[in-house]
Length: 317
Image 1 (spheres, helix red, strand yellow):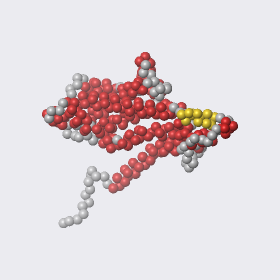
Image 2 (cartoon, one colour):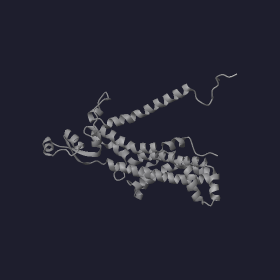
Image 3 (spheres, rainbow, N blue to C red):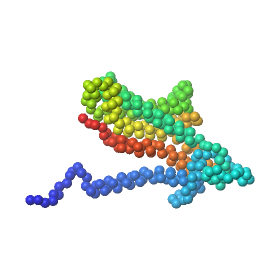
Image 4 (cartoon, one colour):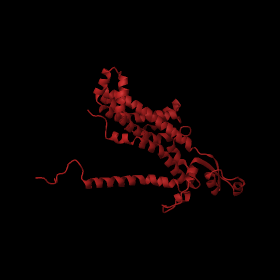
């Protein structure tokens, strides 16, 4: 006797479960994006619009915030401004409308470059050292391995501010204060513990038999590591790199304490953007928007690895 079965899978979610889950995900995504959209909108407002109350949703876009971010300006008399020639670009035109003239470039771009060098440099070193250490803990019998792993993890238990003064004194004696090398080494030391713990979990999921087969074929241990383990651990390496980069990119406390000029990064510089009469919020919004771009692009490029990495998508035995 044939007929339609009313049985359903206990594993496969129902249609209403899928719809509710999708709705919750969309709502959560929109809520989390509101601050980012507001920052971007603020970067396109004029200074009066940025501090208006109630806040303006509809406004005339302007690039004044970006001009104020990348230039320094000086207020001049109307007679002096009239004696000047035609504005060379839109930033000079906006400045003259405010009875000011552009006198040079700001310090934002060097600070942004410092962030790139320090964040990506420390991320590369942390992932490199973390991968080698994780491989050693995963594949070899290390004496007191559990105690060593706990010690490595314990370095992240203490809040950074608790060791800020000792690190400041040590860096001052070593001549590493306000240097890119000093910040790279510091961020690497902080991130390497996270890298070791994350990558050890991924490498543990890779069957040892693959390496044993490679060794039987004549590969050295290093060749087996490079040609067998690393390709399968790419997912974990990418996910770890994203987490390490996010910390180094956004770090503020050590950047304020240990840098002031040469190696200063963007996070401590952005709050110092001050316009006439107070904070220049469009310039702050512009600086924050530009600051978000590299980490956003990096995450998007590695998003597939990140999603697989969070779920531990390595090969299982």
